[in-house]
Image 1 (spheres, helix red, strand yellow):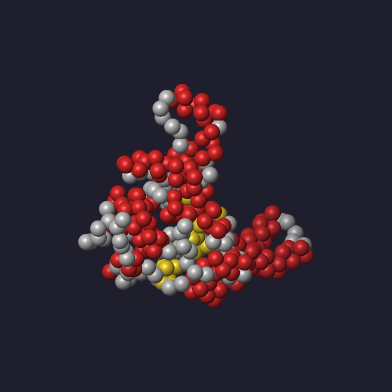
Image 2 (cartoon, helix red, strand yellow; image 1 turned 120 degrees about the horizontal axis):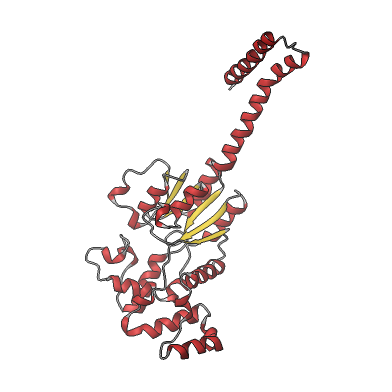
Length: 315
């Protein structure tokens, strides 16, 4: 940088000198002061730009966090709810692949999975990873990171409720999201009379809002702090804006999210292209042969305390 400063100063001062010789312009003492001050100004400007690069866009101080498998024990919850909803028994250690219905010799169908995920109690009673709230709070308060939580929970899906239990699922969602009180509203009753026998179910009309309210309530109940909650939409397989997606890949690239905590191997690899570091929480389903060679900026961790220690020591 000293060389650049000297060369830059030499160029414009030489140009000014020869211009003055050609035009007869006399050079005052201010000319020599400017020449002497130019290298200092050059270095000062570089320092400002370097600090902006290091503390601004390059180090955004945003930590992206997935929920399922990262903040909660979704394998234990899935096995519990599978038994409740379908009567099928499954040990959490058998979940070595996601989605579960793709596990060889596993007596779990895609319909069984939908029966579990469409049941609101699955989301409201999800157990958190022990001590996760305290560690996330330390990262946020002590290290100064903004916590952005991402999740792709496209539930409920009314068209995929179990055929013989549609009303049970509908009423469960209304009760879980406290929307049942709207069923007696005069405006709702008038619309129902106009539709005839069809009954309005508020959660179904609100798209992703029921799962957002359940997720926010769960985070509050588990005392997990965060600055932003993003319920992802669109295709999780691309961050191409032409697909009208709002997922973790697009947002991480757009907002320069510096670090991300993930449990899905494929997502972690793609996030490694846009994030400075990706923490991969160890799970049985991310121990595949494809995990043998990971990008250098993917760091495997067994617990959240390791995430905190890495951010504290390295960043």
